[in-house]
Image (tube, rainbow, N blue to C red; front, side, top):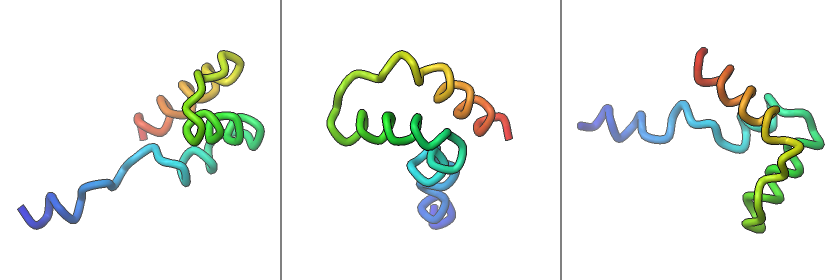
Length: 58
């Protein structure tokens, strides 16, 4: 059980990974969406989805 607790939260597509993989404008729009709770801007949806897919397949 202890190993599960240590591993919890690893391999997460969180802000550091998003910032690394998304263009700066897309990251800023996505971060604003997360912080404020607005709808995802459709103009960034494809880039976010592609970055998440590539990250997940590694």
